[in-house]
Image (tube, rainbow, N blue to C red; front, top):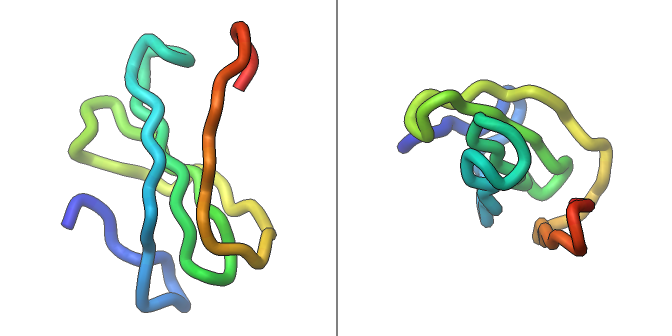
Length: 70
């Protein structure tokens, strides 16, 4: 796998990816563990780093862009 589940969780799923050039020059991924939503970043789309935990008890992540706002 490209990413492992975060500590305390056995799963990470349903990733949504923002490609380089769509926001900045990095890859961005949002995924969920069933308990939280996670934001990850990567310089190359292979090596990912957990960047932020969003404290939402939810499942699916949905990203959209309207004009230049995500």
